Image 1 (cartoon, one colour):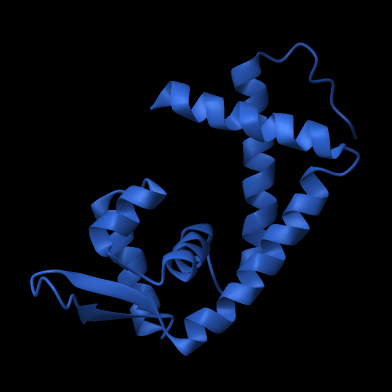
Image 2 (image 1 turned 90 degrees about the horizontal axis):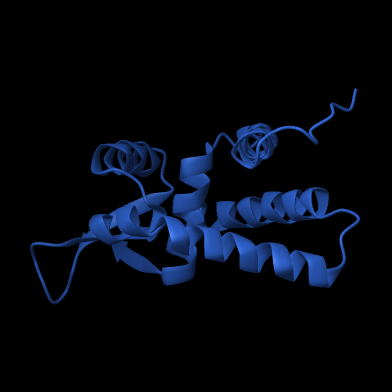
Length: 142
């Protein structure tokens, strides 16, 4: 049943939509035994090849305890590995293992499926405008 959202305040509407998107994405990631944070970590490490834990936490806007917990679990499951930074022995670098790199394809597939679902019926121009508005909202909140 379609609910009438025309009188819902903007912030409430944003919350409703975000909740639905995250709920749908969560169910898709569970097929690969991942949660949303782990999927984000895999994708970010795939894009950057290696990062320190601090850089990763900042990039994903995660708290140190949250990132530590996720990394520990992902390392135990064989998705990522740690190694000392060559130029600064105090820093540990995180990188994907072969298993992690292979799993990135699943993460990309989920992202593509979610993109298709979310933007169904919208023109490329509307999608670009939506993206630009999200970036502006993010900048306003920083």
